[in-house]
Each structure stands twice: as structure tokens, then as C-alpha cells.
Length: 134
Image (cartoon, rainbow, N blue to C red; front, side):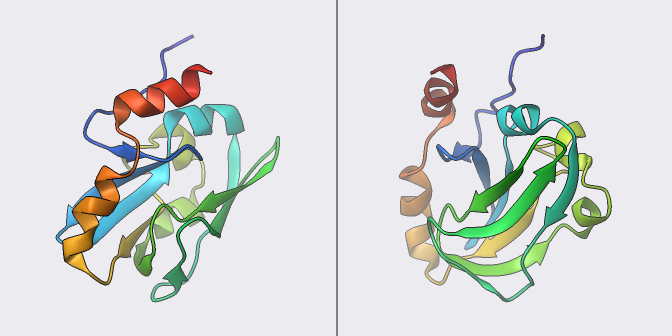
């Protein structure tokens, strides 16, 4: 069995989402390697529309595998600025490249000054490793 990948440069949630800052007020979100392993074979991804609102802590998307359907929760509040159409067409990208081509969507926050504070409140790689070690 291979070790779970937990890239150092990302932030994480206890719900197994990763967050990468990609612009002054924009983040990219996906599910972690740990989550895609738990899901096993992803067969369907339902993402929100561009310009829809994401509420922190509330479900905004679903990932379905042969084993289960899992909600994806907003790690922070903002507006969907991009969705990964490739994942909707080929959901297996979540399994094969969770931190690359398997990303889900991008969110733009209203106040760019708050973004760094919001990100620093999320788990770092060591904190996420503690979550998945339990």
C-alpha cells in the first residue's frame, strides 16, 4: 500500500478537502488523496454552476462512487468562479490525480484581505496528517 499524499503547500479541512491559493482572492478546491482512496472508484461528480454562492460549512457538490455518495463542503464562503468540466466528463480524474487534473472548482472570496486569514485558520499538512492518522 502506498502512503497517502499530503502536499505541504496546501491547506486542508477535516472533511478531506484541499485548498490552494491560485490568485489574490481565488482558491482552487479538490478532495484529498485520502478521500479518493476511501471513495474508491469515482463514477460521478456533481458541481455547482459558475457564479453560484458557496457557504462555509455547507454542502455545495457531490461525489459518487460505487461505494457511496459523499457531500463536498465549503471550506470558506465565496462565489464559484470556475468549475473543472473535465472532472464532470471524466470523474476518474479525482482518483488518478486528486491534486492536479482532478481539482473540482475555484472560489473567489469577496474580501481579498481576509483570504490569508481564512486560509491560515484551515489545517496545514501536519494538522491534516493528524486527522487521517486517527
